[in-house]
Length: 120
Image: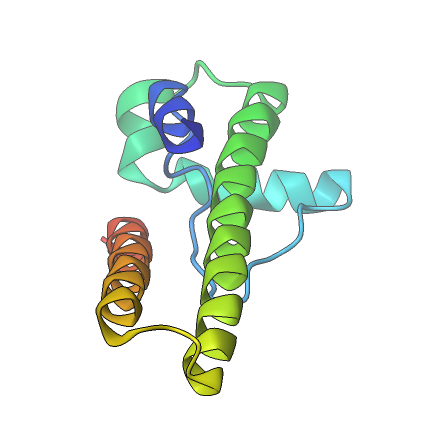
């Protein structure tokens, strides 16, 4: 649902970099302006928003994208941490361990596709 809203709201590439550790929201007006100027260099802005977007709208779509990314990281850590713990303890039967590991691999691949979209 969060990913769908991010896509439908046009927020998808408002953050112009991708860091594995994440990042905080810009804290000052100057930092917001720097992010907005960077976004203006990207084709998404040039094709869809050139001359029509104000800083306040950019802040909204940036927050949606930031929240989407941080939610994904949180879900990943909350899934991978217990999975690793139970794998190390030997508490999972091999078929379940394999299925859960495959689910984690799918999540990681989804994150990779997100990184690839931003890089391209």
